[in-house]
Length: 385
Image (cartoon, one colour):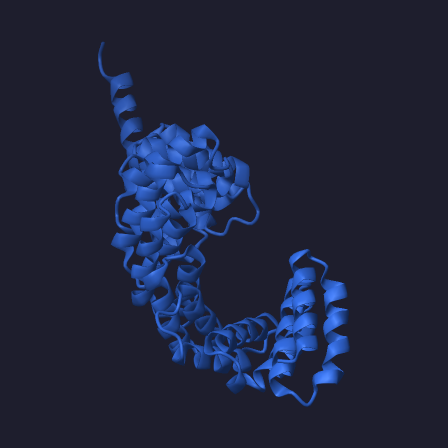
């Protein structure tokens, strides 16, 4: 190296140490035409320029300077050339030149003993962006083996999920939960993966554990209730829904009240089911729900209440199952001793072909009972006192 070049390079480095990058840049750019015949000095000048541009975050210029310097890498010490190559690989990645970045970084890896985790991750990231997941996973697994960083594990998880490799995603999520147990999203992701595998038992266990440890938002509380029902544990679903509705964590709307009612019904608690479904029916103004309330009241022999629900159902013009409602309303009237009203209602039910026979059978039964009652009354009135 000539004394003049040495002086300029030294002065430029001193300016760089003082963060005076622009004057240093001008010094080096003025030097380049004077040393163009000396490849070694040119390589060193471009090396210094590259560091200036990196400090200024001017990546296009830093990229060109690094490429120029590495054109004469054979003249540079190995550690210097490797440092330049690693920086160039990083810039390729930053500027989305992933194919070039992977190539340069692989060259760097071949000449480096015990590469740091970040280097493996960079190559893995490049392969991921090139849509080569198999190669990406190879390098990313090496990265997390050295340094289990959260974002690196998340990238591995993303690849498995994109490939629908749910069985491989499970241990990754368990790893994330082990290192970051307070982050609820990983518990919920694990639940999702189990559901994708139709492993409802594990999905329920995971979501239930999440609920007891850190609570759940409304959509996941409803999902937990659905999982209880799917696993045929309706009582747990009903208790969960009832408690969270009271706490205000779950919105008190027709849909959620209906879900609560259905849960109590499956848990064989018809009175509690009727209470919830009745509230849902009022909010929803749905004839079908009113009809269901009436049907439940029939099963518990609450005939007067049943009659009221069936009348509510029939008052809705969009209610379709009218014949069955008229039939059951007629039976409810009969059970409460309103025989004339029962006959009138059953007569309407008989207009529907599917239940005509049932309606006529009940009408005959009521008429027979009325005839017997009349005969008994007549006999009592004519018998000697």
